[in-house]
Amino acid sequence: MANTIKNLSDGDLVRLALASFHNKSKFIKTINRQYDKRFAIEGAKNGGSLLIKDPNEYEVTTGAIMNTQDITETTQTLTVATQKHIAFAFSSLERTMYVSDFEENYMNPAMSRLAAEVEYTVLSNVYKNVYNLSGTPATTPATLGAVLNAGVKLTQGLAPDDNRSVLLDPLAMAATVGGASLAYFHKASELERGFSEGFFGRAAGFDWYQSTMVPNHTNGTRTDSTPIVANLANVANGDTTLVTTGQTSGQTLKAGDVFTCAGIYAVNQETKQVYQHLQQFVVTADKTCDATDTISIAPTIYKSGPRQNVYHATWTSTAAIVHVAAGGSGTASAVYPQNLAYHKDAFTFVSADLHMEPGQRMARAVIEDVAMRIWHVADGINDKFKTRIDVLFGYKTMRPQWACRLRG
Image 1 (cartoon, rainbow, N blue to C red):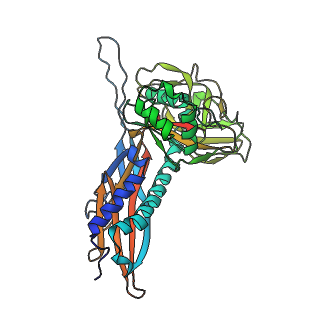
Image 2 (image 1 turned 45 degrees about the horizontal axis):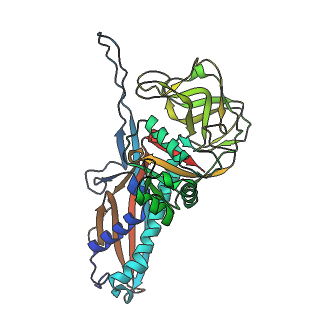
Image 3 (image 1 turned 60 degrees about the vertical axis):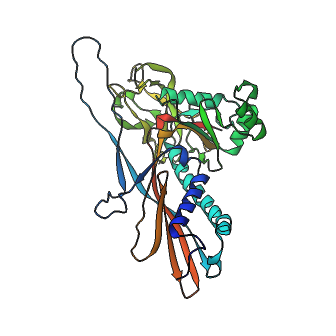
């Protein structure tokens, strides 16, 4: 049997590929990553789903008399079912290439493409669960103000101060750095980086990253000041939908559209103090409108109790849904990039081992909780040695309140 690559074992090869993949990733390596080794073990299968418990929340009682409260635990399901791979073939002669040639000419470009595909797959889905927005629609962030306000959103959502990142597309990064007064930065290293490299390393409480994988969002064709929540009194604790009227039949709401409801304000999750800004909501499923509709939304509405997250003065009136005013995702049908500011634990990425068939030339490796498998297949008819590199993964927005979109 011919050697795979000169001086490179199968184990070395997959570790080289995985290291290159990790170095190419920007978003994935800044969020929570988990590796589940049960997937490829006989007798320990979990059906491709992980059940993750949400943090418990409580009410505080004033006074000496004990007031016990029921605990209702909630969970989220994360499914590991997305498989991506890159495959290529070498002739017998090509398989004798040196490691440096192989790494430069094949491995790095392949891992760059695979990492980009995985990153875009994750980003283009998780942003749709984020209801916090900072900045002005159709305006690329040109100052640190939008980023600082995003930090406020995270803090109000009780996100820890550490492990915060901001991911911007190149245009947003250039506009933000160019519009910032670099003289205000006290660290000489950031002054030099902003001037000479055109991006920040750390500023405004965030580690900064630039990526061309930042997705765009296309707003639905909905009318900007309708629909209207028919009766807030019908909204109950735990609701993930709103019944609306007044929309025009045929118009659309898109998953990822953000809106506010007149008079519904955000609430501090711990103290239950009412904030001065309206609660932002996001549409979680595409909807083609009728005269009356039921719209799927997030966050889940809690009007009272230990999980209270919204406040309205009466809960007996109607409330207009607004997309364009402060807090909305912008003009109908408009397309905006979805730059993100987030805490590490806002999102989770889980990878798992793929099956290894006995007698096949396969190898697996795990680096920083990202698993990868390499598989060599011989094609004797065409004198080709085919190689495929696979990753199996899942992802979920676990704490959307710990993330904020930067509109541009």
